[in-house]
Length: 551
Image (cartoon, helix red, strand yellow):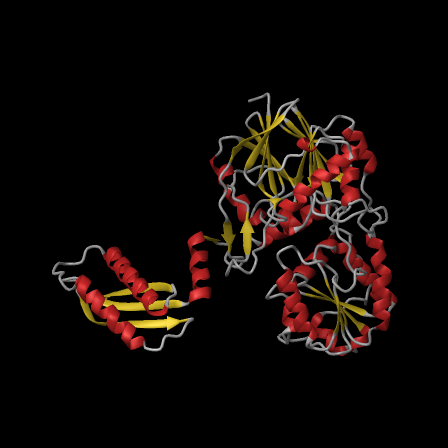
């Protein structure tokens, strides 16, 4: 219908990750962002979570393009997993964003590429949509908000931002452009809300440099900093401090090395000749002359920082003279992994600084209460949808609106898949698209079905019983006694359990005297029988795996 526009979040609502948003008008779809999610410790054996794009695969509406707001994984990380399944369409991102995205696409062998746009570029017309990229400050270079013009009205997509008047790279939020565009009228503001719990404005990035220099000067051993690989501004501050303190800089970890290469390629990082040292050469330098920038600030199991902490790294060991700085807050859900890693590092005797004990080495990339209030005040929208936060952040955002004199009813709190319909004068909830959880193994890139996770959860909590039974294919009867293998729990008399199972299966199959045609039924019967007997014996429900051997 041409008299309304539909907004559908496929991810990023009530959750900090998997950001992906659809704007639909006149049978056309504009997509903003295509991000990954990260599992918590309850989702066993899963590396990544993806937005569910089943709706996009089924719809007959035309995807006219995609705009990427910035280069964080939760906004671009799903591109190589999803693009090849979708019809072809143009994708746009600012210089660092497109460079990071294209590096990822090349690595996965995808032929898709993101087109680079400058902040000075005129509007990009995508049929009935016109989009403008607006520079904002965040914790990754070239972050942007997107101003979306449609025949129904203008939408301001304010993903991940803060107002930093003194960023380390000197590239401030383009306030004048926000004001100029907003004068055209904003029907709805889709806004970052993650920092709404914090009062005031978020601190400037520039405040951290002095802290690095101070601690580096007092460190008698290796100075180790772990941060997000994409936080080029933070990395540049560590480099500058190291240069001043005459320390060599070494990049450790694949993601950091990749980000460094991308940043150098587009001129966002300049290492003076002789400052950087390769990993296999650090043994030639005294510890007090080394700065190590290490990947793994979120406690990732196979990261360089985890391997160093667990004494599994070939080149690097920790000692009491070393200092390790976590220059990043734990992503919500990663707290256990991060603090577990910090505990392990502490056992080495190295000094550790992290957000809970010092706020001198990390500032958030997200606006606090006053930043969010300022954005809403600048754009003056008719309606507001908080995005990119947990649901508590979205609910708290109503306080921002009320402080600006808005009725809280203009703040809409959808869930992922919930459609919001806009006309020029109204907004309302409409249908809800059912979304499934999409789990992916990062190494193989294969999607995992939900039943696989249920099996893994059962294995972790209750163990496994493997039943090997021989069945005569000619008459369908049990041959001999079944073998039982148990793991993950103890049971005193396994022979007794085997005898009970053998007797029960003989009762079931003993009367059969015909050729087996349905082996699935045989396996299912053995499995259910073993489950029941095991529960009676040990009062728990392990995963039962029947293995039927045809004889």
